[in-house]
Length: 181
Image (cartoon, rainbow, N blue to C red):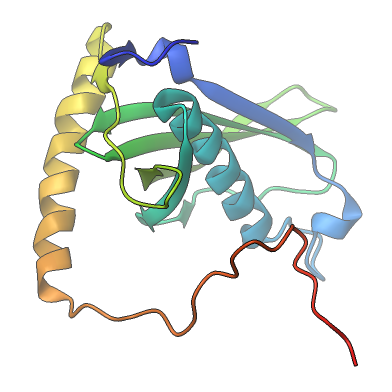
């Protein structure tokens, strides 16, 4: 895919599906919320990376409301699309559904909005292509995302900046290796 000035929502839509197994459950047999949150972050990362055609990082995540429990044996389907783009940031909307394989019933279990920032090879914010909403639904999501961005910026202005406590290791292959004496 060639880098362009703009891209449609459809070009970066992404989804992942996973069967929930016993290792994903808490002691009560429900799938842990953290497992769902990880899937949300992963699928949002994929959509943001496909849109920006570069490395991206999660800058924020709005509320995570768990609308229904997910159980071992359910298939979880997480779907993501770019709702809005700024200069270097993108809002990604994610919808999560769980399907019971015994009945076929599908339940909406979570929705979230995440903001990602595209980075260049030196980890500086990088300009992203503008999003082109085509359908009425995409246009509605775009307008709603604009309002959410304005609200996020108001909250962000109230925060005090903080410096990182450590820097990234340079020229170290992943996984990071340490010299052992």
